Image (cartoon, rainbow, N blue to C red):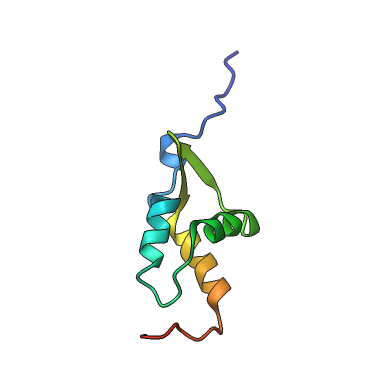
Length: 81
């Protein structure tokens, strides 16, 4: 009897994986930029699935956007927007 593998199947990975650094860079384009420390805290708070690729943690960008929306709901944009 063969044992099932403990690694996820390639087709089970989200299509929109980005590194935490890439997510922070993309969020800089919004009225509510965030830091990598805050993004790491959100991954825990919102129980986001993280995937390790080499030395980088990857997350689904759509999960990041949902957390970003929820965290910044009701805030006024920073100056210049």
